[in-house]
Amino acid sequence: MFTKTHVAGAILLTGTLLLAGGCGFKTDPVPPDSIVPKAIEDLRHSVSEKGVVLTWSFPTETIRGTDLTDISTFDVYRAVIPVEDYCPTCPIPFSEAMQVPGGVVDPEGTRQGTYTTALLRSGHKYFFKVHARTSWWAASTASNIVSFVWHIPAKGPEGVKAEGADSSAIVSWRPVTKLMDGQDASYPLFYQVQRSKDNVGFANIGNSTAETRFVDSALKNGVTYYYKVQSILMVDGNAVSGGLSESVSAIAVDQTPPAPPTGITVVRTGGGIKVFWDKSHEADVKGYRVYRRGAAEKTAKFIGDVSSVYTIFEDTGVSGDGSYYYSVTAYDQMETANESEKSREAGVRH
Image (cartoon, rainbow, N blue to C red):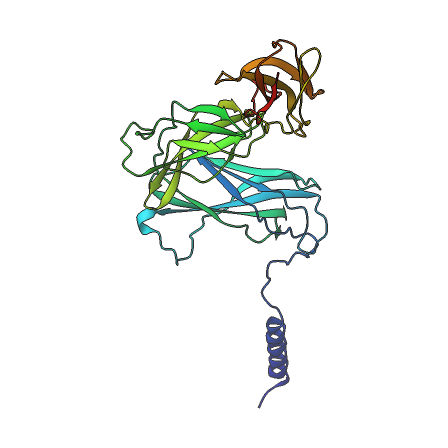
């Protein structure tokens, strides 16, 4: 039989258990959508003999679509795997985050984040991803993942030359045979040509090639272009970017002559012989050159130069008898002019 004291104790114990059952474990707070940045989608990397440089654009919006004003930090995650141990279907073992300072967001989306490291081990595959944070508890999801294999890279190409051609430039270099540490390069070597208009910001053009010559086409004539060539070592199917050459420059040169004039007509006058032709419609024509050939001559001789404003020439240096044949060429405004083929001949008899 329970006493009043026992009953009171039972009631107190039951109440304590009920209170304990109503207290759950605390979880991390969930940040509102209005402050969580969108994920970075343009993580890029550039590998050279000095290491790797990661770049990405600052997010400008939250996952709700509202504007961001600043990023507190970026979390950079790295994974390192020996090439021989790499498993394409296995999870990537990312390490703890390395923090990079953020800053004020550019509304135009032009501000770039950067992370650089030279702590790379030869024969290893590297993976990187980045998260953006607006606070310690509001982070974006992961960016796209970039990866590359690091190996002792090849030296940069030497003997690089660039020669301007018609709307193009021809870049050539000597083959690379050594690694950065002086060892012979035993893996296949490729080359990547880079171009710049200001000799500062270089970008890859075309695909990498095993050749030591590259033609850069569709250029604007009269413009100076700068070139560098980077060596690429192919290690078990993985591209290892190597040294960069010194920059060289070339000016694309117009080497295309105008079309030959048409409508050549020859008329005898009291003072000599007048030659007429149709005006060229090509914008770069600077003038015309007139040629004459006597009936007994096999080769026409230059006899006069006419500005593009005119389409007539009077030949006063002929005798009163004999047969003469005339042809006309057009030439452009280049310093060393490109001259067209001769027009068809038109003749006159005296």
